[in-house]
Amino acid sequence: MSKNYFHAIATLAGTIIGVGMFSIPFVINKSGIILLFIYLPALGLVQYFLHKIYAEIILSTEEKHRLPGYAEKYISRRGKIFSLVISLIGDYGALLAYIIVGGIFLYELLNPAFGGNVFTYSIILFLFQAAVVFSGIKLIASVELIMAGLLVFMVGLLAWHGWGYINFDNFHLVSWPNFFLPYGPIFFAVGGSAAVPSVCKLLAQKRENIKSAIAWGTFIPVAMMLVFTFVIVGITGNNTSPDTLVGLRSVLSDGVIIFALILGLLAIVTSFLVIAQSIRETFWWDFKFNKNIAWALACFIPLLLYLLGLRDLTKIVSLAGAFTGGLIGLLYLWLLLEVKKKKEQTSIIKNKINKPIILLLSFMFIAGLIYELYYFFAN
Image (cartoon, rainbow, N blue to C red; front, top):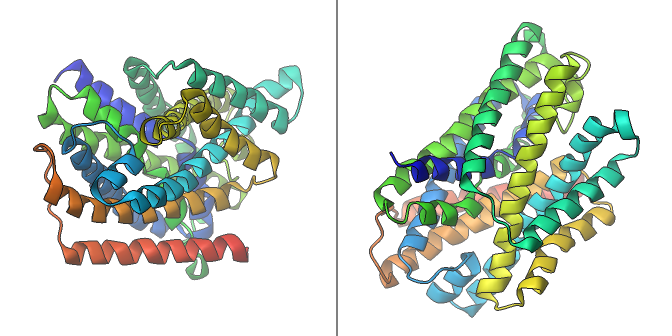
């Protein structure tokens, strides 16, 4: 396999492995460990299917776009606006979550030496990330490859050091009132659609490898999240914190936690850059905005939401997951039907899709969205 093949896998895996992974243990502790082994594999399969659908849409089209551009091309101008709105809700939710958790992790790392508070560190980290996006410096695929390897090592290290601390009394089997709680956070955690265009670009000369790269890039993070969540919940139980790593301080050594915080922070930064660049390109490519205005819209709206006090991580990732995995997933399904009728070129990926599959997934997406909206506003 070529170097680009592994870079493509790492780009997708590195985008998926972000703040979402750190939000899963908290909701699994509340809902029950059995649901981890139901939701994570099932939603991982669904996201793999959606990633393949997006890849087929890209590969069937001659010009480069982001989702709103494809919606306009194959559906209508109204489809473009609809896709923009739901994309921005999901993507801004993701960036807001990265600001929240990134600030917490940076605070835990630097506060002992420099003092300060979480808010200050969140702003410092945000300004750094926004500057990188503004400069136009894209993530180098080889750096993503190194990061993916380090993150696998991080999870392995936590599992190895933490296994002896697991107390099986910390596992609750199922909490029926919270049965649907993991849906949004896990759907959010295993989504990596923003990286699919990069995967297709990296393998433009070896398109026959795109499908397997998407599979590896999706399921390696799923396996990591399963091991990571099982170990964390087994160690911390009811003391599991919303951001996960901070709650481990009372159990594992500072050296292990510091290492995990650094790698977790790097994972958040790389994911932030991919999502922010995706939003910027949406405004730039599909709506013809000035690239600097597109940058400001991509970066500063989530900062404004943070400044307005939206800082409940579980609610944010739940709602973002419902929108990103739900309505955007719904749009992918119906968009693919139109693409198959009007495709400009032959795609190496050909997803088999029919009305029963569309209706089944559509029902799941809509039901999940309704639940997450209820959870968001009722709690």
